Image 1 (spheres, rainbow, N blue to C red):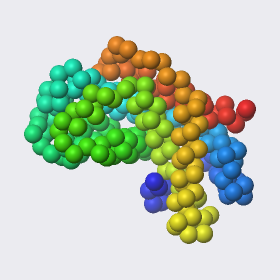
Image 2 (image 1 turned 90 degrees about the vertical axis):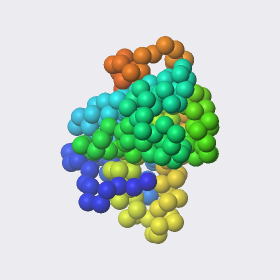
Image 3 (image 1 turned 135 degrees about the vertical axis):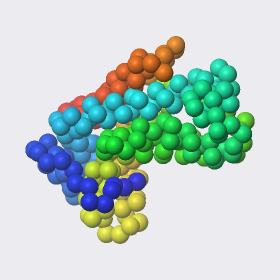
Length: 237
């Protein structure tokens, strides 16, 4: 987890508030309340400059691709799904090769920072999902068993975490005394984000959503905004 060298968060009073709240985490020994305040201010800052809407759109596009692919695998098998999405050259390849090809397919490209963050979140999600896969049969089973509600929640968790550290990892690392301390701090913040979303995320029991169409993208965009609001409202609670 980290940030691109030389990246500087936007300016403006909302971002100044967010930066101060990030510094405040260290002064308060990274207590849950101080992390929550930093996340709340960060959420408000992203909503204030339009980056949040752009990020929601990137997440909606990449997430709906992944769920549409899973539906194809569930209905017709892995080889059919690969052929349908233009990845027939991966049929019969190793799970590792298919994994790399799917990451590229699910990604939205890196034309903007928000697309890059969405792509990184997808890569981290896929790495965890595919961690124990060693055969084509296991790979197919992984997508067959992919639950839409769980996927969206966990993917959005990755997205908010990557987004936060893209903006503030450099600042956090500069405050910490050494690399080990920085890694522990990042783990603590990541766990706070994960637990807050796990507790407050509203699963809708999804059925019959057309993930390959605009309906699926809009649904994920809406859920992404809801997750941002978990933290925005957290600061006012």
